[in-house]
Amino acid sequence: MPELDAELIERAQRWCASAGRPAGPEEVRAALSRLGWDELVAARAILADPPPARPLGPRALADLARGADPRQAAEREQAGQYLDEDAAAAPGSRRAPSASGPARPRRPARASVVVRRVRDRAPLVPAPPAALPSLAELEHSEGRAVLERLLRRHGARRSAILADLAGAWRRTDGGPPLPSDLDALLDRHGLARVFAARERALLLHALRAAGGVRPRAAGAAGFPPEEWPAALARLGAEAEAEAIREEGRREIRGRATLSQRARMLVADEERLADLGMLDEVLRDLRARMPEHLRAIRSGRPASLAIALGRSLALSRSAVERLAERLPLDLGRPRPEPEAPASRPPRPATPRPAPRRPRRPGF
Image 1 (cartoon, one colour):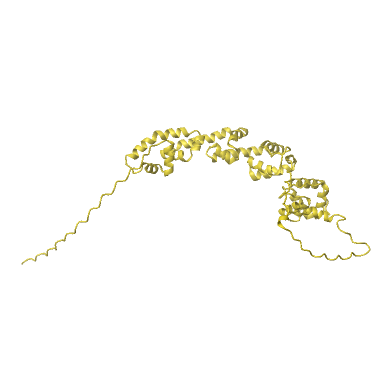
Image 2 (cartoon, rainbow, N blue to C red):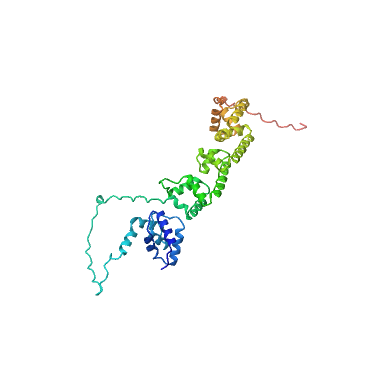
């Protein structure tokens, strides 16, 4: 039988508590003492990761080391099969054979038919959810591995990391982990500086990808829009964020044609408003659009809205949105002139026969 050290027993106890099935050291020792050397190595590898299912006790841990499926082991633990097996294997649970001779064979029991009615079935009472382990356990050395695994999975997205922590850990007051708790854990394990650098790069990249629009960048980075300024101030990235927004303003000023300005107003008014460019674009369009409409009316189009859409490369709905936003008076489409009445066909006149040329000498 392999030797079980105190550190392995303690790790198994914490693992079982995280899996919703706390156990004492004697119970853990009794379950792991049945494993061989290879199986014990597999059990150590399983203890390095969070529990794959809930609940899982010492006997379930031993089954996982032998290659059992985690869901099946959790179902057996939920149904209490491991407790029944322990009770059946306890001394005195079975009748020991007599020392004087072999035991007499039992007489086979008579088969009986048991009829169970559906209305007599007792309702199933769901088992109460197991208590989640305390967040204070992540302050130990094993907590660094948990944080590094979350950083590899979610990067520097605080909301996603806190959501995973809330699904497996609880504070001492029973509430979910807070951002301050995450900061304290990162600082304790020496990961605060690396996390801050990655979070700063994440926020600036999200702002650049959103064209400088702060609400869109906050949503991409997992922040509520109202917390975006505080996050930039905490990371010292306000100057770089404002430089990115100024690049967006220069890009908008460079798109100065009437068609480009009209399409920006119709398709991305939110960006213009967030960058403080909406009033400038509106003033420019209101000053230039009447002259453009007079030029279109000089051609006497059947529909001024359709002609305006063709000149600005806008759809009919976009033209209506533009006319409502500026506003514009596009009028009603001019009715097309009626086609003239067809004349009756003229009767065909017979053509005279061609004369034959006269021969000379006659």
